Image (cartoon, rainbow, N blue to C red):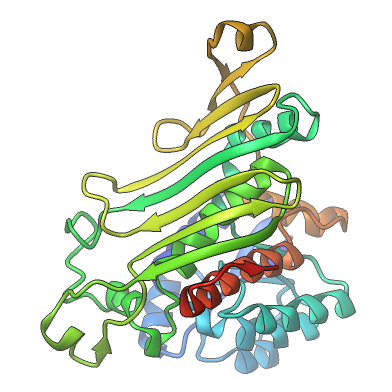
Length: 348
């Protein structure tokens, strides 16, 4: 039995708890939150026996093997480093840290302790994405030439997930003082991982632009100064020479949660649209390329990130994406902030 603690008991933590509870041989044993009432309520909801208000208290009083860190972004490192140093396996929410420098602390700590370490880039759960990466890695698309990746959300223009004007769960995501890195740090990290994973390549250089739009009187609601970026755009060159764009916004009307990636090489192309399907991948290669025709491949389901994390603990073999991968993605996000501030392209 692998005993798992949930660190941070906000909205996304419910998803973690539900998914771990489905896995045979896993037991949720503790919930941790600085808000004691919230921790107790979360534990009662998920039938978790113990609640604590700090990682230090958890480590002192609880017998557990692994933890999933689901705190706001700014607290990932301060929570995960003590866990890793104590020899606990860690699945961490994205982004791994607010900056690549902070993320490297976790990479180094995990390497030194030898624990299983993974980051919840949840769209890796898509079997279509996994199949796309294998096609590219096998050379089926040839040399990657061009791609256009986007992550579109509409919660600033539509109350589909609740009214952000009044909900703390959304307001903190709009405020840098409350740990937010804006849409780039929140979902831009996902689409950056998705695009470069599918392309089987890394970013060589980029030119980025970020935008904060006026949303409230004096750009403030209560204690929240609304200064975190709402839209992000990157023009990217890959190490292999391919060019592409990566963009994200919270102002995409009619798009609750849309991720898409057309990717083109000199021997073929693919189209991934997770808004439509996690398992369907459109491909144009071989004889179809000569006629500019597309076919849809139905990709078999792949294990979830939670299942792969547990499997890694059991096997002792660290699956991807690990902390090092998340650090590399964070380097691209840092470069975007730097490019936006300078107005110049940045090499990684």
